[in-house]
Length: 393
Image (cartoon, rainbow, N blue to C red):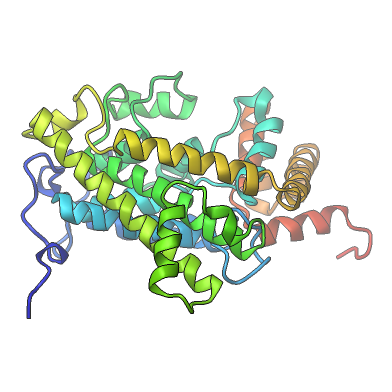
């Protein structure tokens, strides 16, 4: 039987990130006897409380609207699967790739981007709020699973990948990031290693395809609406020719699967062209290359932009989504105001932290941390407990 050699681990490329050459952790720990440093990072992320709560956090549709819609957890798992597949073919470290992919959305609030927008609005006088910064805060301080340190004490390479997976950090640093880089310089002006670059594009591939699937399932658009879309139109026509008697739902699944394959193949082919052009001999060459090593082709990038425009117009701005988002933002903002005015309504540990802080900015950040960590379901329950007069307990 002929074996697909790409399905099996190959020696790492010279420009990959080698676990044996990791720059280590902020707080030194003895090495594991059974796992590489990047495997330990991945495992710590999976076992974190923030990762578990992603199962009840919105991707596009509010958790509880249906069993088949993506949540932040299933999205993160799909990103990790796509990223690992690309990393394997490009001979990169799969464990580091997976760790960055699994961690990239840990800082998302309840209700997805609607919750983030609401929290950002009320936090504007106190330094603002973004899910990317919140992800970093979770990794370096907010997780409290370990007796020896706050956060997860991840390796330099994983933290770098999470912070820079979308490219060099050129804008003004947040106070959290600025303070951390004084202790552990993540070299924010350079690109991340190739594994993090893979994770970033895997994120694009996952949500641009799976949101089409979820949007169609929710009735936001019809199968016929996909005909004029790049990638999806040709893939749908091919699926119909191959499976003329397939149901509409199966045709969508076949189409989505085909488009994912096309995007993955494009990333691999384009990256190989870039490797031949830049000839990186180490991961440092990748970090200091004039542009990202892992990339879509110009044609695929344009196709992705058209898909984003379609999703923005037909899904993310749909009346049904807008109404739910408006309600979600109101819940988040009212919770923030209530907890700021009456911190004794917070759980004991959180209440003490707020009451012991004389600085309003720090008080607001603690309240924001509490709300950002809520699942959709818990946020609704907390709001009902605070504002509903139907029950007093």
